[in-house]
Length: 74
Image (cartoon, rainbow, N blue to C red; front, side, top):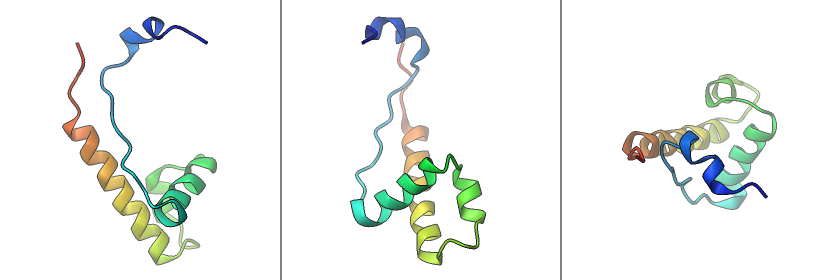
């Protein structure tokens, strides 16, 4: 295992991923990440159901909100 101090200079903020319902939001996000897709790519896929795309929008907005509120570590 690599000591944390080696990465300290590269970390500017810590963002908490919101708790997600495992069977819905969590599965949708996991599927998207396993396919190595961005939110924009996934939301543009017409093959995804409207509910899946809506859940991904909600997750994206929560994550972006966390990023906006993140405090920069010194």
